[in-house]
Length: 606
Image (cartoon, rainbow, N blue to C red; front, side, top):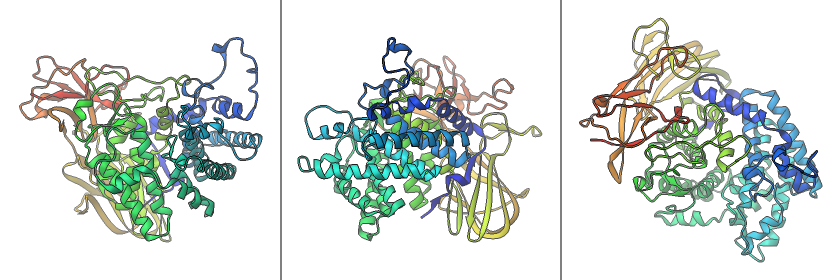
């Protein structure tokens, strides 16, 4: 089993991923601390300054939308904020965010004390009791999961002992609640969109080794979805996608923390069966989404559900987390390939590159436009997962075990890795000069430029023997080119990795070039309907409808690469094309680069 290199030891240094992280981090800092805490204050009976009486509600300095004091899901966003801020504190060493996080955690401790010492919710305790009755209540366990998650991550990544203490006291409330409520409803723990709770109890058990978390694990581990997965067949079609995916995180974490071999085997198999249900047997859009209107699409019926409400962003983020669990266990590159596709066509494509705001769904119908959230008036569920997603990149790049370092994603970055008694420094850049994005050029070369030219520098003060494994992406065309210290080199390939096993010392420079081409990916239920994909990047045509593409079976004959060479845009703007020899020619650009333009992803090939 591989381990992710600790966030504090990985730093994303440049390129489009760094740009998007910076936009996200600026937004986290921009949000007002009192507004982030508003619903926790109101629940604890704290009067917000100057808001005792509102003569003009429109002028109130409050968060609205799903964070408004009238919404039953209010307060969910702060947990996401804590998790994202903690991740940035770890990977970037951001002191300003650390001060803000510590202040928020101390105020949550104040609210917990005012609530009696255990409850620290942004919603009333009675909301959870309503789960056993007939009165409607909107997902209170979802809301509380975010708070617990944020507190746990504040401890794990930002070192906040106070956050762990708050979560520990809140766990005592949950034990009392379940013991009391289960007399009238033995299934109450499985209501209110509780899918993520199991992972947090497992995480807290791993941190504290306190047996009370084993009790909570047992209270949440008998999930109905687990039974369906164990029975085999399709356990997901037409079910709420984002309620089910976090359940796979729970089974995955149980595999890692439980001690009984039979239990471990059972939960590992459940996680693998979930993936088979969600991805292998279902198929997906070129962007990795497999849901519409928040529900799982039946297997290989993607064309039937193309519309404005495809690919809820929460599902993209959570499926990447499931893939990451499976990748660490197996090292199978199919999971890293999936993650790469999701990063470009979900994490980037569903974030506004200027404001950092999310689009709840990713519309895939012809002539679609992305609908962006606002900074303080929406706070959808996807708003929360978006701020988390941009802080996740450092955890997805490098993995290690006692004998190897694996580069799973090609993102400019630096990492410090312990191998035995040695410390290895590894840096990764796209092997050209950067001008603000991850498309680069070599100012001294007249040759063709490649986005997929990567340079690694490995430095060791003391000799270290290990295997460096470099993922060969599934989209790679031909044999990758490898140059070590200026000389072209042969290499061994194993399980879709270039494997360089050596005793490393001093400084070693490795240049790696992958070939790529545009391919047409059809939908199984309408094979004439295709998305154009350049490496892992889905292209969007800037047209109002599916005007069709005449290509004679070779999509590259219908495209001409459009490269901009001006400092006002990008120095070398790759992955952009215009069609040729069509009745009406138009432009293709990366889907992640589309902001307010009208676009079409799927075209009829003729």
